[in-house]
Image (cartoon, rainbow, N blue to C red; front, side, top):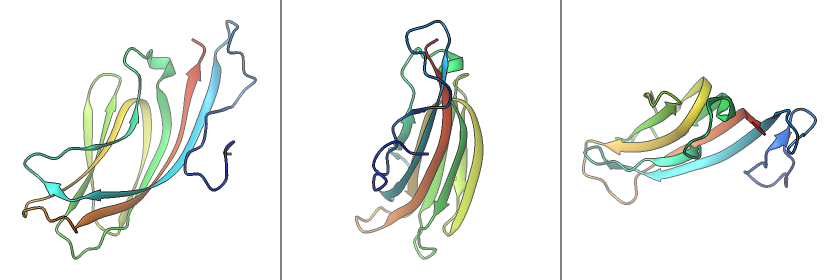
Length: 145
């Protein structure tokens, strides 16, 4: 459940248990976020990914986000762009997932430090070709450790 404006794509963290921010007991927090993606198709030789989630440096593993992420790639099958999701976990390992146009991907994530998306093409980039998608994140993390 979102605790901010229903028309907003951003939901503020909501406690899943009784908050205890100043005591010794950690609190499980939830983030539910749904957002549209529209990113220009870039040259595959030097793509610049778009950050969807970034954990602060030094975040302890129990406080990193875990949960589910789904992406629906609504891009046209007529364009030559490839959508790639890059997920980095607490070990530093980055895993790449290719999401074809007009398809979807659902992932269960654990101890995420970075989530990025990029759109690339082997053809020279043009300013009017985009990848579009809907991203939904349902993540939990522990606060107060």
